[in-house]
Structures are given as C-alpha cells and as structure tokens.
Amino acid sequence: MNARIPALLLAVTIGFAGLTACGSDDGDKSDEGTKTSQAPETTETETEPAETEAAEPEEADDAAGKPSREDVVAGYSKIVTEGSEQSGVDMPDDIVNKVVTCFIDEVYDDASAQTLQALADSNAAGIDPNDASLFTEAQTTCTKAAMG
Image 1 (cartoon, one colour):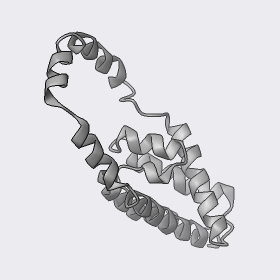
Image 2 (tube, rainbow, N blue to C red):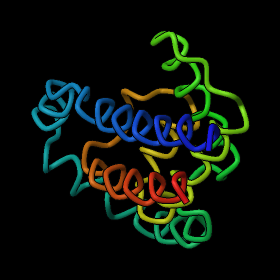
Image 3 (cartoon, rainbow, N blue to C red):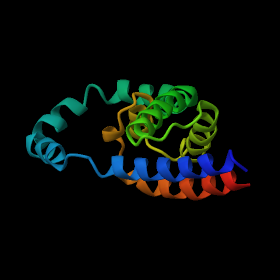
C-alpha cells in the first residue's frame, strides 16, 4: 500500500509535467519558418532530391526516426527525477522507472519522433504540443496501473 501512494502521485506528476511541457512551445519560431519559406526555391530543388528522399523514408520507416524506448525512458526519468527533487518530493528510483516506463509504453507508438527525441534528450520544452492528448491518456492508464 505504501508503494501505491508514491506511484499514484508520480503518475499524476508525470502527466502534468508532460502537459506543462507541451504548452511551452515558442510560437514565434514556427511563424519565422513560415515567413522564410519560398515556393519557387522548393519547386526548383524538388526535382533532383525527390528520388533520394524516396529511399530515405523507407529506411527510416522501421524506426520512424524515433529514439529507442530505453533512451526515452532514461531521458524522461531524468526530467521526472529533477522535477520531483525541485518539488521537495523524493521518489524511489524503482517507482520512477515503473511509472515512466508505463507512460512511455503508452505514448511511444503514437507520439511524434520530435516528442520522443525531446524526452530522450530530457528536453521537456521540445515536446510537440500535438501530443498533449497522449499524455492525458497515459496518465489515466498509468494511474490505474499504479493503484492496482
């Protein structure tokens, strides 16, 4: 019973941490990228690299450009551990690992490569805001698992 309470608190904390991170994306950066793109340049350069680009996605399809689950778990564990230390809550490593692994197992297949790489790099600000709903769903699932 004592292990369930920290696991439950951690599941809730991780869910909120993921959602908070999703909201910290800088909107100005995407606007600048849109302003600098020019259609004529793209059209001219698409003719030659189109064939090489077609081969690259096939190679990347297996991994979909995503880091390994182990790397994502390690990076997200670091985010959670640092966050709990800053909050003054000391979570046992085994509970952090269990709950973080649950979260990553829940979001890995559906999350963007950008989000997973940000987590692997322990960069919560790099999480794609479009993946926010995945964190909400994972929080529900992992909270139930922590209680059961």
